[in-house]
Length: 268
Image 1: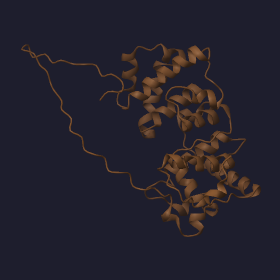
Image 2 (image 1 turned 180 degrees about the vertical axis):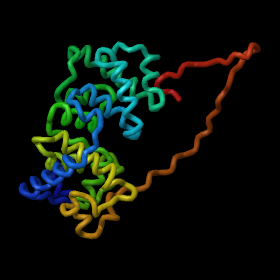
Image 3 (image 1 turned 45 degrees about the horizontal axis):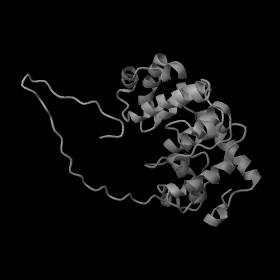
Image 4 (image 1 turned 45 degrees about the vertical axis):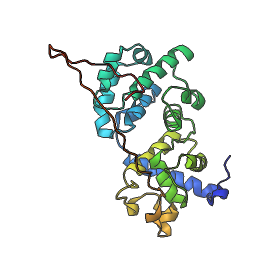
Protein backbone atom coordinates (compact mmCIF):
# COMPACT_ATOMS: atom_id res chain seq x y z
CA UNK A 1 0.00 0.00 0.00
CA UNK A 2 1.15 3.54 -0.76
CA UNK A 3 2.75 5.32 2.21
CA UNK A 4 0.85 8.61 2.26
CA UNK A 5 3.28 10.16 4.76
CA UNK A 6 5.86 10.23 1.97
CA UNK A 7 3.51 12.62 0.18
CA UNK A 8 3.00 14.84 3.22
CA UNK A 9 -0.45 13.43 4.03
CA UNK A 10 -1.28 12.36 7.58
CA UNK A 11 -4.48 10.30 7.78
CA UNK A 12 -6.93 10.51 10.66
CA UNK A 13 -7.29 8.00 13.44
CA UNK A 14 -9.99 5.31 13.24
CA UNK A 15 -12.49 7.24 15.36
CA UNK A 16 -12.34 10.33 13.13
CA UNK A 17 -12.66 8.21 9.98
CA UNK A 18 -15.83 6.60 11.35
CA UNK A 19 -17.19 10.04 12.25
CA UNK A 20 -16.42 11.33 8.74
CA UNK A 21 -18.21 8.41 7.10
CA UNK A 22 -21.27 8.91 9.29
CA UNK A 23 -21.39 12.67 8.62
CA UNK A 24 -21.08 12.23 4.86
CA UNK A 25 -23.64 9.42 4.64
CA UNK A 26 -26.15 11.21 6.90
CA UNK A 27 -25.99 14.17 4.51
CA UNK A 28 -26.39 11.87 1.51
CA UNK A 29 -29.43 10.18 3.02
CA UNK A 30 -31.07 13.60 3.40
CA UNK A 31 -29.96 15.26 0.17
CA UNK A 32 -29.28 12.57 -2.47
CA UNK A 33 -30.74 13.12 -5.89
CA UNK A 34 -33.49 10.77 -7.03
CA UNK A 35 -32.04 9.33 -10.24
CA UNK A 36 -33.33 6.27 -12.13
CA UNK A 37 -30.05 4.35 -11.89
CA UNK A 38 -30.06 4.80 -8.11
CA UNK A 39 -33.22 2.73 -7.83
CA UNK A 40 -31.48 -0.47 -8.91
CA UNK A 41 -28.57 -2.75 -8.10
CA UNK A 42 -28.55 -4.24 -11.60
CA UNK A 43 -24.89 -3.97 -12.71
CA UNK A 44 -25.86 -3.68 -16.38
CA UNK A 45 -28.12 -0.69 -15.69
CA UNK A 46 -25.49 0.97 -13.50
CA UNK A 47 -22.84 0.39 -16.17
CA UNK A 48 -25.03 2.02 -18.85
CA UNK A 49 -25.58 5.07 -16.64
CA UNK A 50 -21.88 5.43 -15.79
CA UNK A 51 -20.80 5.33 -19.45
CA UNK A 52 -23.50 7.81 -20.46
CA UNK A 53 -22.55 10.18 -17.64
CA UNK A 54 -19.02 10.47 -19.01
CA UNK A 55 -18.87 13.86 -20.78
CA UNK A 56 -22.66 14.37 -20.42
CA UNK A 57 -24.86 16.22 -17.90
CA UNK A 58 -27.22 14.23 -15.66
CA UNK A 59 -30.45 15.81 -16.92
CA UNK A 60 -29.44 15.13 -20.53
CA UNK A 61 -28.65 11.49 -19.77
CA UNK A 62 -31.97 10.51 -18.10
CA UNK A 63 -34.16 10.17 -21.26
CA UNK A 64 -31.31 8.49 -23.17
CA UNK A 65 -30.78 6.04 -20.33
CA UNK A 66 -34.45 5.09 -20.20
CA UNK A 67 -34.74 4.66 -23.98
CA UNK A 68 -31.48 2.68 -24.19
CA UNK A 69 -32.69 0.15 -21.62
CA UNK A 70 -36.06 -0.03 -23.35
CA UNK A 71 -34.32 -0.92 -26.63
CA UNK A 72 -31.59 -3.12 -25.09
CA UNK A 73 -32.95 -4.44 -21.77
CA UNK A 74 -30.22 -7.06 -21.25
CA UNK A 75 -26.52 -7.55 -21.89
CA UNK A 76 -27.46 -10.11 -24.55
CA UNK A 77 -29.64 -7.57 -26.36
CA UNK A 78 -26.77 -5.08 -26.38
CA UNK A 79 -24.26 -7.69 -27.56
CA UNK A 80 -26.46 -8.67 -30.50
CA UNK A 81 -27.74 -5.21 -31.45
CA UNK A 82 -27.33 -4.06 -35.09
CA UNK A 83 -24.82 -1.21 -35.27
CA UNK A 84 -27.31 1.15 -36.93
CA UNK A 85 -29.80 0.75 -34.07
CA UNK A 86 -27.01 1.03 -31.50
CA UNK A 87 -25.76 4.31 -32.94
CA UNK A 88 -29.31 5.62 -33.26
CA UNK A 89 -29.88 4.99 -29.56
CA UNK A 90 -26.73 7.00 -28.82
CA UNK A 91 -27.44 9.80 -31.30
CA UNK A 92 -27.00 13.17 -29.59
CA UNK A 93 -24.70 11.94 -26.82
CA UNK A 94 -21.57 12.12 -28.96
CA UNK A 95 -18.30 10.23 -28.43
CA UNK A 96 -19.64 7.18 -30.25
CA UNK A 97 -16.59 5.13 -29.28
CA UNK A 98 -18.24 4.83 -25.86
CA UNK A 99 -21.22 2.86 -27.14
CA UNK A 100 -19.08 0.81 -29.55
CA UNK A 101 -16.89 -0.19 -26.61
CA UNK A 102 -20.01 -1.02 -24.60
CA UNK A 103 -21.12 -3.46 -27.26
CA UNK A 104 -17.67 -5.07 -27.35
CA UNK A 105 -17.77 -5.37 -23.56
CA UNK A 106 -21.26 -6.92 -23.75
CA UNK A 107 -19.90 -9.46 -26.23
CA UNK A 108 -17.03 -10.17 -23.80
CA UNK A 109 -19.57 -10.82 -21.05
CA UNK A 110 -21.46 -13.25 -23.30
CA UNK A 111 -18.32 -15.18 -24.31
CA UNK A 112 -16.02 -14.90 -21.28
CA UNK A 113 -18.55 -14.81 -18.42
CA UNK A 114 -21.39 -16.97 -19.79
CA UNK A 115 -23.64 -13.93 -20.12
CA UNK A 116 -23.38 -13.02 -16.42
CA UNK A 117 -22.05 -9.58 -15.52
CA UNK A 118 -18.74 -10.12 -13.68
CA UNK A 119 -18.96 -9.49 -9.94
CA UNK A 120 -15.35 -8.69 -9.02
CA UNK A 121 -13.42 -5.47 -9.54
CA UNK A 122 -10.63 -7.18 -11.51
CA UNK A 123 -13.02 -8.87 -13.93
CA UNK A 124 -15.13 -5.75 -14.39
CA UNK A 125 -11.95 -3.80 -15.17
CA UNK A 126 -11.13 -6.29 -17.95
CA UNK A 127 -14.16 -5.19 -19.96
CA UNK A 128 -13.61 -2.96 -22.97
CA UNK A 129 -13.97 0.74 -22.21
CA UNK A 130 -14.06 0.34 -18.43
CA UNK A 131 -11.34 2.15 -16.49
CA UNK A 132 -10.58 2.25 -12.75
CA UNK A 133 -13.29 4.82 -11.95
CA UNK A 134 -16.12 2.96 -13.72
CA UNK A 135 -14.97 -0.40 -12.34
CA UNK A 136 -14.99 1.09 -8.84
CA UNK A 137 -18.44 2.61 -9.33
CA UNK A 138 -20.02 -0.64 -10.60
CA UNK A 139 -18.23 -2.78 -7.98
CA UNK A 140 -19.35 -0.63 -5.07
CA UNK A 141 -22.88 0.30 -6.18
CA UNK A 142 -24.00 -3.00 -7.71
CA UNK A 143 -22.05 -5.50 -5.59
CA UNK A 144 -21.30 -3.65 -2.35
CA UNK A 145 -17.53 -4.07 -2.74
CA UNK A 146 -15.35 -1.51 -0.89
CA UNK A 147 -13.79 -0.18 -4.10
CA UNK A 148 -13.30 3.58 -4.48
CA UNK A 149 -14.59 5.40 -7.57
CA UNK A 150 -11.98 8.13 -8.02
CA UNK A 151 -12.71 10.81 -10.61
CA UNK A 152 -11.93 14.52 -10.86
CA UNK A 153 -14.75 15.43 -8.48
CA UNK A 154 -13.55 13.05 -5.79
CA UNK A 155 -9.92 14.14 -6.20
CA UNK A 156 -11.01 17.77 -5.75
CA UNK A 157 -12.80 16.96 -2.49
CA UNK A 158 -9.86 14.89 -1.22
CA UNK A 159 -7.35 17.59 -2.18
CA UNK A 160 -9.22 20.12 -0.04
CA UNK A 161 -9.86 17.66 2.76
CA UNK A 162 -6.15 16.88 3.29
CA UNK A 163 -4.47 19.85 1.54
CA UNK A 164 -2.90 17.56 -1.05
CA UNK A 165 -0.06 19.41 -2.76
CA UNK A 166 -0.11 17.39 -5.95
CA UNK A 167 -1.61 18.24 -9.32
CA UNK A 168 -4.96 16.44 -9.77
CA UNK A 169 -4.58 16.78 -13.54
CA UNK A 170 -1.41 14.67 -13.60
CA UNK A 171 -2.36 11.01 -14.15
CA UNK A 172 0.55 9.69 -12.10
CA UNK A 173 -0.85 11.39 -8.99
CA UNK A 174 -4.13 9.49 -9.13
CA UNK A 175 -2.60 6.77 -6.95
CA UNK A 176 -2.37 9.26 -4.05
CA UNK A 177 -6.11 9.94 -4.10
CA UNK A 178 -6.84 6.26 -4.61
CA UNK A 179 -4.82 5.45 -1.47
CA UNK A 180 -6.71 8.08 0.56
CA UNK A 181 -10.04 6.67 -0.61
CA UNK A 182 -8.95 3.09 0.13
CA UNK A 183 -8.70 4.15 3.79
CA UNK A 184 -11.80 6.37 3.97
CA UNK A 185 -14.37 4.32 2.06
CA UNK A 186 -17.20 2.97 4.18
CA UNK A 187 -17.02 -0.87 4.12
CA UNK A 188 -20.73 -1.25 4.85
CA UNK A 189 -22.08 1.28 2.32
CA UNK A 190 -19.32 1.73 -0.28
CA UNK A 191 -21.69 2.53 -3.15
CA UNK A 192 -23.49 5.25 -1.20
CA UNK A 193 -20.15 6.60 0.03
CA UNK A 194 -18.86 6.93 -3.55
CA UNK A 195 -22.11 8.48 -4.77
CA UNK A 196 -22.16 10.94 -1.84
CA UNK A 197 -18.73 12.21 -2.85
CA UNK A 198 -19.85 12.43 -6.50
CA UNK A 199 -22.85 14.55 -5.50
CA UNK A 200 -20.75 16.72 -3.22
CA UNK A 201 -18.06 17.25 -5.86
CA UNK A 202 -20.49 18.19 -8.61
CA UNK A 203 -22.44 20.70 -6.52
CA UNK A 204 -21.33 22.17 -3.19
CA UNK A 205 -17.64 21.42 -3.76
CA UNK A 206 -17.62 22.04 -7.50
CA UNK A 207 -14.63 23.40 -9.39
CA UNK A 208 -16.33 26.73 -10.11
CA UNK A 209 -18.24 28.70 -7.48
CA UNK A 210 -18.02 26.17 -4.63
CA UNK A 211 -19.99 26.85 -1.45
CA UNK A 212 -17.62 25.64 1.29
CA UNK A 213 -19.76 27.04 4.12
CA UNK A 214 -22.54 24.64 3.06
CA UNK A 215 -20.36 21.54 2.88
CA UNK A 216 -21.42 18.83 5.34
CA UNK A 217 -17.77 17.84 5.79
CA UNK A 218 -16.36 21.36 6.26
CA UNK A 219 -15.22 20.71 9.83
CA UNK A 220 -13.12 17.78 8.62
CA UNK A 221 -11.66 19.81 5.75
CA UNK A 222 -8.10 21.05 6.38
CA UNK A 223 -8.31 23.65 3.60
CA UNK A 224 -11.54 25.07 5.07
CA UNK A 225 -10.21 25.13 8.63
CA UNK A 226 -6.83 26.61 7.62
CA UNK A 227 -8.22 29.26 5.27
CA UNK A 228 -6.49 27.72 2.22
CA UNK A 229 -9.63 26.58 0.39
CA UNK A 230 -8.90 28.75 -2.65
CA UNK A 231 -5.52 27.03 -3.14
CA UNK A 232 -6.93 23.54 -3.63
CA UNK A 233 -7.03 21.48 -5.66
CA UNK A 234 -3.75 22.11 -7.42
CA UNK A 235 -4.30 21.87 -11.15
CA UNK A 236 -1.61 23.17 -13.47
CA UNK A 237 -2.69 24.60 -16.83
CA UNK A 238 -2.54 22.18 -19.73
CA UNK A 239 -0.14 22.78 -22.59
CA UNK A 240 -1.70 24.76 -25.39
CA UNK A 241 -2.74 22.55 -28.31
CA UNK A 242 -0.72 22.87 -31.48
CA UNK A 243 -2.71 23.98 -34.54
CA UNK A 244 -2.98 21.45 -37.37
CA UNK A 245 -3.72 21.99 -41.04
CA UNK A 246 -6.29 19.51 -42.37
CA UNK A 247 -7.59 19.30 -45.92
CA UNK A 248 -11.10 18.06 -46.63
CA UNK A 249 -12.72 17.19 -49.94
CA UNK A 250 -16.32 17.05 -51.05
CA UNK A 251 -16.81 14.83 -54.09
CA UNK A 252 -19.94 15.19 -56.24
CA UNK A 253 -20.70 13.59 -59.61
CA UNK A 254 -22.54 15.05 -62.59
CA UNK A 255 -25.87 13.76 -61.22
CA UNK A 256 -25.43 15.87 -58.09
CA UNK A 257 -24.76 12.83 -55.90
CA UNK A 258 -22.22 13.06 -53.11
CA UNK A 259 -19.63 10.41 -52.25
CA UNK A 260 -19.99 9.33 -48.63
CA UNK A 261 -17.54 7.11 -46.78
CA UNK A 262 -18.50 5.44 -43.52
CA UNK A 263 -16.29 6.53 -40.64
CA UNK A 264 -13.90 3.89 -39.32
CA UNK A 265 -13.17 3.80 -35.61
CA UNK A 266 -9.90 5.51 -34.78
CA UNK A 267 -9.96 7.73 -37.85
CA UNK A 268 -10.91 11.38 -37.98
